[in-house]
Length: 513
Image (cartoon, rainbow, N blue to C red):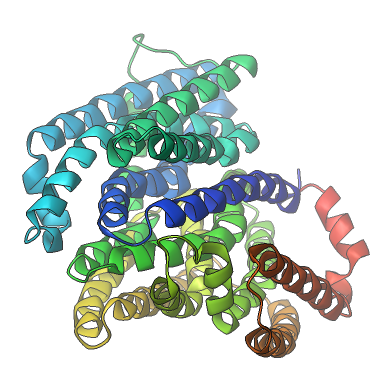
């Protein structure tokens, strides 16, 4: 099946889940704002959620699928045994981590959120919430393994749709806690665990329904475990680089009141195009690329990567331009109500503006990293990730002192571009990916079209600033109208270039890679 079609399936369900995610954030902004309760919950949830993003969107997928796919090509029994081995192994490891974290949670929290220590009330709330939420790590790790199994069988819909369950449960939890006058933090923390159990149950049902076998307690596939370990440890750093940088930013931001929340809401906005474009293409690319590399067809491998990059930039560059030109409108309309005031909106918009400059780098990282894992060569991206993390830490500390939380967004963006440039040069020098001259023409078309789009969006911003709109429905309608007109305008611009025309993209959508 076409990589464009598979990624479209993944993107569709991701979009639905992100819509629910934005609804959740709008409700959270109304009930929690950017005060103490918001900071505590977002930090407590950030710890296991960072692992979720690293595992399900990177590490497990990158290390599990190449090995699992090889066994599927041999005999299903070997693949079934390997899947069972990894499930048990990661269940045991994450359970041990959770037990230690529960026992030493005050120490754990003081390391990861040192800025909370001076405020005893805030610190104690964070410790109690983190103790409830942290077992989510085990649940989401198992969910990530079973999602990877389904992905290897080209079943991408459920893994993309899983966050819908989490978002619905959290929405019901915060509304129920407010109207029944319950402790919001406690109810929210418990609801995270309930959501994890529901997600795991749905995945197991899907595996059973698709007649996919997982063999437990029979025999250990030593070679499979060795190959998995060789890929998994490096991929934690390389595939989860952005999440590691965000976690570092959270630690530093904990020293400034409200900063954690500003960065969280900005992160929620740019994560939408990142998920729809970078994560979708990266997850779909890996199994397809692994199969082509096994067939040793270099021309097809390079062509597939180049095509994926073009598709990514076709969407990533205009998305980056849109977030850079109109962050204030986006944040105001989506979040500014209740406890989320004008100051919260303005501060979040500043962070989003700088994150937008790194969006293309975030997306390209998700596409370039799987190339190494499809080739079962995980060490280079590990080295690059370590360099990037060090650069991010140094830049975050320096820029935070001068610019506050905005400096963290700057540091994340700069370090991500450093990582992309290093990876691109290395891939080219060592022959893992060499693009053709055909890349430049579509890239030029995309950049010119995005520039013209940026001018149009700037005019929309000027018009909005001169209008006095107080009704929230009218504000939302204006934003939706801007989005719709901008999409139509951009599609018309790029379609003058024949490969981006509707007919050409339709053929590309239907063909097999």
